[in-house]
Each structure stands twice: as structure tokens, then as C-alpha cells.
Length: 111
Image (cartoon, rainbow, N blue to C red; front, side):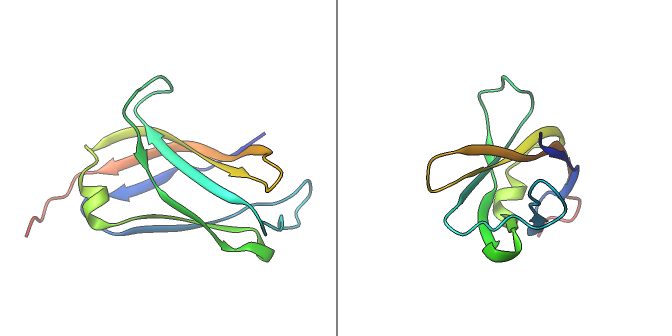
């Protein structure tokens, strides 16, 4: 079962978040050889998705980084979205490790 974590993103700003994936206890899961993907959508059935740049950050410590550039976050309409993070092992086993709500707040200052 995935961990629930809610995210807050300022539209038009760079975004970066580090997530630690734990194995069946409290020890970090070694993510060597894993790939990671993450998307946000308005609803589970929405055909429009916004992709995070998701990568294994420190494999041995179980850390994943989610990122958006200022241009990417600025292209997301303000509002509430659903997201998840899925990891895939080198053997092809896919696991959803985190899910939750993303709140995108609008940009006021536009240069």
C-alpha cells in the first residue's frame, strides 16, 4: 500500500521534493536498478496528465527526487490534482510507493 503525502506547488516557480521509500519496516529500500515515474491529473480518469521529472536520487538510501521547472509548473492550471509515484524494478515489478493530492497555487508576479 502506498504512503499518502500531499504536495504544494507554486505555479511559475521551480519545484523539487525528495521522497524516501522504505521497505517493509522503517529501513530505506535500496533503489539500485529501479526506474521511477510520477504524474498528476485532475481526476483518476482524466486524459490530461502533467509529468514530474522523477529520478532515483540516492539509490542506496531509497531517495527519489520529483522536479518541475518554472516553465513546467507555470503551464499547470491552478487547482487541486491527484498524483502518484511508481517505481519499477529491473525485473519489471511495478509498485506505487506514494500518492496524494497536489495543490497548485497561481502565480501573481509575472515578469
